[in-house]
Amino acid sequence: MAGMGSAKYTELGAFLRSRRERIRPADIGLPSGPRRRVPGLRRDEVAQLAGASVDYYNELERGAGSQPSEQMVAALARALRLSADERDYLYRLAGRPVPVQGGAASHVHPGMLDLLGRLTSTPAQVITDLHVTLVQNPLAVALLGDHSGLRGPRASFVHRWFTESDARRQYPEADHESQSRAFVADLRAAAARRDAKDVEAASMIRALLNASSEFAALWADHDVAFRRDDRKRLHHPALGLIEVNCLNLFSEDGRQRLLWFTPAVGTDSADLLDLLAVIGTQALAEPTH
Image (cartoon, rainbow, N blue to C red; front, side, top):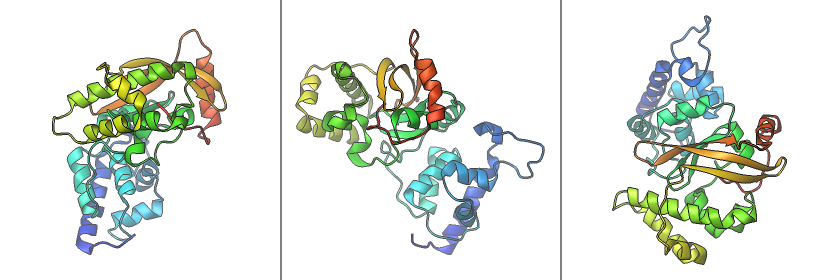
């Protein structure tokens, strides 16, 4: 990574330090403890939350070191619970382009991120209204696979569902038709709620109409319905079939959703979900949500 101008890099370090010091440990589920000597979070705690080494984060706060990548800037913004304006400011200090809203680097609403951090005993993740996964807790990765490396059109699970056969392997074949119909109806509702000048949803719809005859046929039905809650059957490579309830919490503007998964009543899914913490994050089939 390239170096940065010293003045702006010094400001970057100062800004990171100021945001770190304002966060109370209890806000992100950490014990405050009588031995805590600094206000807010410690540097090593921010580094852990952002997936960075402690030495690297220390260099950033000192205004030294190398230019952080776009992925690292996004991780720091989430770790520090930045507002949208603060996130954009951090990107500019780092000399990185501010990402467009809706992609995999979209800024996660701080309130949703806070709720996600408190959901430690159930799989949960935040996605966009176009089904791009933004952040997952460890149990969601264990259940659904790691979505963090997906970029471009493939970042949307709806796009993968209609263009890549492997995307459907976690669902029983008998459920494919109903899932396809639900995805299309949800996409129509999400696109309609966006601004008329929005190009992201329109581009995605055009691409799917050209790539998938199944999507085109379902789109022509004009069904419209947001996915607010579902009962899903998922094939897990180690645990077998797991039946879950998938619940949704929508952000105020509808652009983001917090999903969490609970065991379906009358099944053995509660025991299976408990095993996820034991199994951990392993190489899974194509992720879904």
